[in-house]
Image 1 (tube, one colour):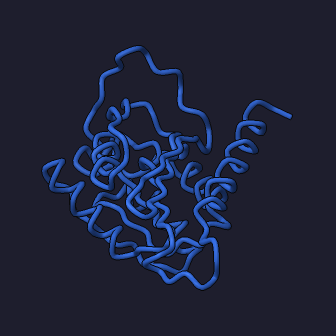
Image 2 (image 1 turned 120 degrees about the vertical axis):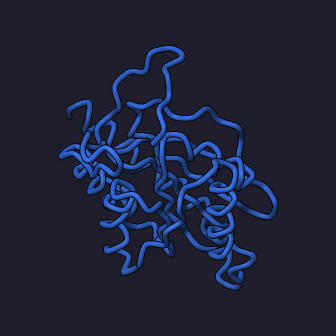
Length: 194
């Protein structure tokens, strides 16, 4: 088994465990009592043009397809993305597989955007929600949902998959990866917007 296949199998197993931990303990629980599972990823690898709204590269398209596979059993109840082509194209295959429309939350000042996404997630309490964001928005969104403080992602980090389980005022975060691994990040790597 190749290193990539082992990593993909481990990621699938990790995701299955995370999602099973987030499942309601009894079928009698209502949506407000059930945990909310938020899966957060950065958009797939982006092209360089057009400069103001690039789409995905072939690697980014492959990553979007890998996301569908990883989340196949997750019972996604909502998909949230920004207005940019790269986030929408990353989210679209998963949204289509779940027969959902993408909810668009426009970017803006970091804290305002993070609060708007957190508010959108809270409208789907008790469900599993996919959020596709940017290198400089995911950490703020996690914090706005009550998760830990994280650094922004580096510009070359695309494989991170964050699972935040919101349950009775607590927030548990698990960081995993999916698709092709991102290259090793230099210490203190600079971040770039989007």
